[in-house]
Every structure is written in C-alpha cells, then in structure tokens.
Image (cartoon, rainbow over all chains, first blue to last red; front, top):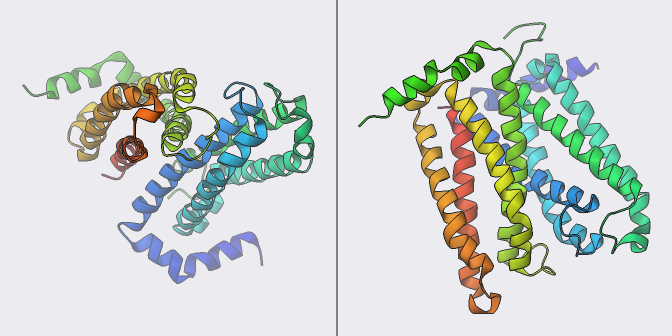
Length: 169
Length: 158
C-alpha cells in the first residue's frame, strides 16, 4: 500500500472522522500541543545551551541531563500524541502539504541527531562532564538540535498555510 | 474611554498595513513568536520546577534565577516585539476577540507577578520560605503563563 493509500485509509477511520467533525477536539488538541511545546522544547533548549556552555556551566553536564531529560521525554510523549491526533484531523490534506513533509524529514533528522549523540560522545561523558563547554561533537549535536527543532516549529506553524498544496482546500 | 480609536489608528499605521498586505510577513513573525514561546517555556519552567524542588536541584534557587533572568528578559522582549507586530496587522479584529483580551489580562498579570512576588521569593533566603509557599508561587507563575499561551492559541480559534 502506498503512503497516500495508508493516509486515505486513516482518513476513513472513526478516530479521524471524530477529530474532523468535533467542534472542540481540534482546538483542545492544538492547545495541548502548544503547551507541551513549552515543556518539551523549553527543556531540550536548556540541555542544548548547557552543551554549548551558555547556561549552568557550574553544573555537571550529566547532572543537567539526568534531571531534565525525564521532563523532556514526558513533554515529547505529549507532543507525539497530540501531534498524531492533529494529523488524524485531515491526513490526506497534510500529505499534500509541503511544510508537513519538511517537518517530518526534520523530525527524522532530529531523532538521528539524538541517536548519534547518545551512541557516541555521550558514552564518554565522564571525560568532559565538568567542562564548562562540552567537546566539539557534543556542541555540534547541541547546535544541530537547536536548528532542527527551530525548523520543525516553523514548518509546523506553516502547515496551516496551503500556498503550495496541489489541491487547494 | 474606549480603546477602539487607538486600535483603529494602529491598524492604519504603515507597519500594520505592510504586514497585512504581505503574504509572508505575518506567518514569519508568527513563527518567530512561536520559537520565542518555546524558549519562554524553558526559562520559566526550569526556574519554577526548581522552586518546587524538581529539575536541577544541585543549583541554589537564587543562583539559578539570577543566571536565567537575562534569558527571561531577552525572550520576553522578542515575544513582546513580535506580538506587537502581529497585533498591529489586525487590531480591530482583535478588539472584538474575547481570547485576545483574556490573553492580555493574563499577560499583564504574569509580567507583574514575575517581577514582583516571584522575583522576591526567588531571591529570598531559601530557608526562610516554606516548601509549600515556594510550590504555590511556582504554580501561580505556571498558571498565569499557561493562560497567556492558551489565550494566544485561542485567538485563532475564536
């Protein structure tokens, strides 16, 4: 089955129809998505800024990460659930939307960045834990994270605009 | 006195007209506003969570608050600037938008609260304020800022 076929099937599901027909579901889910953004990206940004040596230089990197990562993960879980529900609202329309595609690719890259960080330089954190500024590979992960999440947020906001949709809605 | 004439004057201003007549300006400013929101969430939550004994507990509250305050003020400036620009593009529409007024009341309360009560408690000797009070101060801060965020999102749905 093609991706479009899958999305067309999704659009026929009861959950999707319920999301699209409800007057309140979309605004509530969107508001949750925006509030969870503050928790998730707020915490993630602070972790990135610590890697770059811009905040909390007096704390060990591992201290900041272990204290804030559970909150980041919790925020991310809410983002994924509310984001998936938003998507269910109109799967076929989002499929056509260039900003949605950019957002999904950037999300994959952001995930890849986390994986590279955690399976690489992070394993040697004890060597640079107390450094005010983390080593280059860790700083690179921090910068990539900030840039990719900024792209994800901007692209996400732009999904609302259908300038480039093949089928104008 | 009604604020409507002032709102109409803003709408007729060159900046308001330029943003309204551009296809790209409003979405771009709005996207920057949203990026600021994420950072705002981080700098408010990391301190409020610390006040409740969560998050970066190794760092004293007052030291964390002092370090984060420039970030808070910087982010607030970005939010107020982009927010004002968004406002000037459609003031008379906002004048009749209940969510806009809700957001403005929450915003005024949140700013006043942050730089009076919250700031005082953050700078106070930690042993002199009970954990229950600190939690209350943090929860009020989170509630007021969440009200601003929800009000902002609701403007588009109103």
